[in-house]
Image (tube, rainbow, N blue to C red; front, top):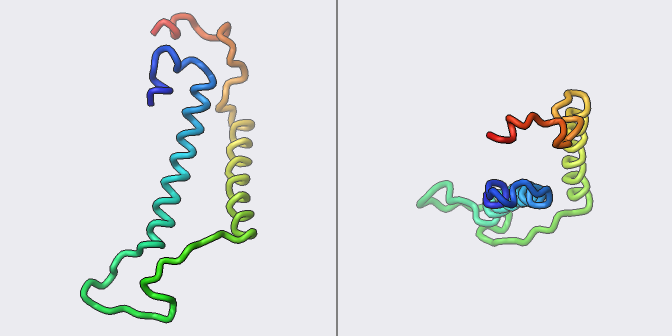
Length: 110
């Protein structure tokens, strides 16, 4: 928040990029905590009852994704980037020129 709202550094491109990267990293960390934490320490679904199966109940196991799982995840990220790129190209949601010469000075004064 400081990177994006501080009056002296919010206009520098490197800090805006750093802020965007930190948001993406924070989202990935949040997904990791929710998904892996929920699977490593599952909730007690039936309190007071014994539930058993043949799948090593109560044992916390480690997990390492396989090559195909990594490729599937990277493919999902690539698909999302491709969709976003095509949307930016064809829907014109990104300005053509970021030069200060094209900005109304009255807007900058506000």
